[in-house]
Amino acid sequence: MLTDTPEAPDKTRGARLEARISQEQKAMLQHAAALSGRTVSEFVVASAQEAAAEVIQEHETMRLSRAEQIALVTALLAPPKPGARLRQAAARYRARIGI
Image (cartoon, rainbow, N blue to C red):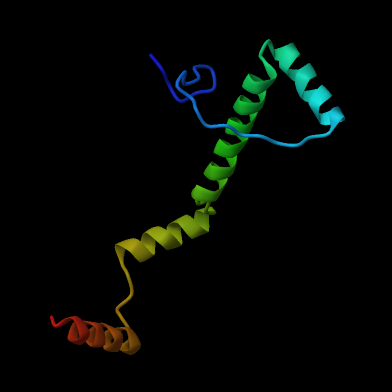
């Protein structure tokens, strides 16, 4: 069974990714790949995929303190009454779309 993890790469890959790196960077990547028992390509793809997943998770996850959690839940469960400006904007919107 194929999964999206670096351990089971998709055999139908057709996209390419190239990067210019220094000789020192290449040597480090080759050394790390050899130590992990992978090819340089496998090592670089797995490492980049892990880093990308971390960045995406950091940007898509909302972290709130306990006080912020309570304030959010309170606002969701008992939202404040709409103010005059919001009621006016809603009335203009309803008039504009004809409802």
